[in-house]
Length: 382
Image (cartoon, rainbow, N blue to C red; front, side, top):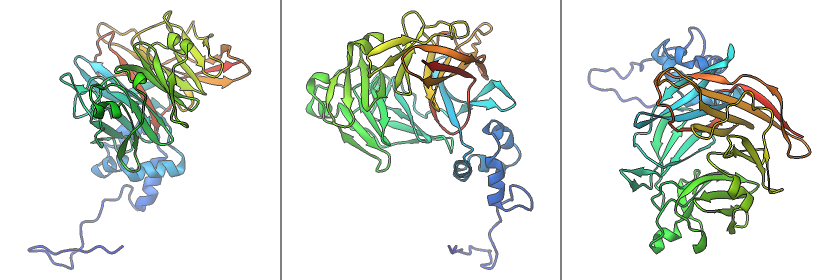
């Protein structure tokens, strides 16, 4: 492709533009990028200190593309932690020389402080949907590009929402609830879907009787989107577009944050035990074999599907107001029935944090394809 240059005052048209500094002396830029793409991302903060060109390289889309081509990308764990009265975002980076140690690296926070947003990951991007500002629901969304480590505003929703439910399927995003339905416009947009390829929001038809306002949890299981309300919940068939009720056993057993791994939904019960729900068999089973290693806790914990493994994050015991953020990764192998047992266990990883957290503050976790592994547990379902 030809490049047209315009000579300014005092500049000769024959002069060439300043050349881009070489990342590695005597090596072409594409070869240098391939070398950097093979370096674990744990070392990127250190590499960024080498020079301005290296800083630009480790934050570039070209490097992320090279990692994808070379298949050196990994699934990343991102956390949003409440510190004092604000929420801060961190990315976990595992030490390749010590799998039991990792660091929480600060990443840019959302320019707008939102309460009650829905958060999900789709590809290399994290979506923060809705929420309220000064108790006023918002129809805005913020999109974090993990390859560039940058936030950008997305297309506004048709309805303002807070405490809604969101899920992804087939490259699209579905959002329900969290809005008033006191007018035809608001009720018609109680559920809507977003297509990242066209950047358009579209209303999803819904029955009047399913339009609960507040949602506290959601998941996509077996071709259906489940959204839990204060009482009961709704199930949306992603294939037929039909709405229905949530199975009673699922409603009674689903408490707090959950994650779906291998078609099974996992969450904590009232006794602080991890339980798995099989939607096809309509049955809950306790996850056995981790009692001696994972603590029993009901709050200040969260879980997420990290590259097909159940990743559990919780507050450890710190000094004074300092809190250790702990992380354990559970591998699940599907066997004949729903008996959950531990096969191989490794100690949970401690994630170093560069600030103090107040105890009892909530944790939120989201994963996407792009950076690390946690300490691993191996669990199998007999």
